[in-house]
Length: 225
Image (cartoon, helix red, strand yellow):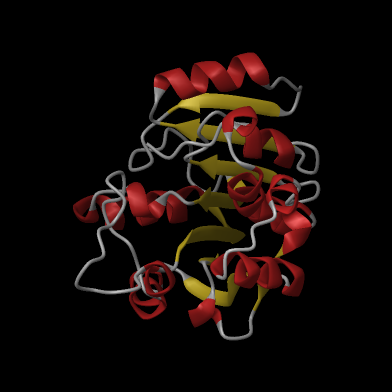
């Protein structure tokens, strides 16, 4: 299980997962937004500070119960729902976000997952998706084992091929470390570790860039219908 509960998550891992929400926050102002696979709702709640309405859905009843308890606002709603069977009318949302979710969807259900998101997205709506970069995490194909909670992990070429079957890909970004963060990683490799630095990592220590996304830890794909 890889669900994010902010108060129980390391600073680096949390910042890495918050960065996509920060990225889209300025792009969804005044819009009706759906998050598919919202977990305990921390990201949907953040987006509600910018959107006219933010709706979070997740298949896990316990996570939705937690979200409803922790995060409350007039323009914020949570529902227990299967990502492959969304209970919304066609063309309901200006934007849909699904961050670090696609790798958890069984391969045979991926077409249905994407078709449902396309269905509920307005004609001129935008779909934002993130997932890890398999080429980045796989150091050796012979020894690599994917996360037990992941059904399918993607290299960029196969991710784009899958997504372009339903959507028009507008932009591709890669999540990379800032120069300062990379320096601390190099020091760590030679045995000099700064726990003080890693405990203070924020979203400012990560950046989304269109330069060489193959080297990124995660992809962010921006799509239209």
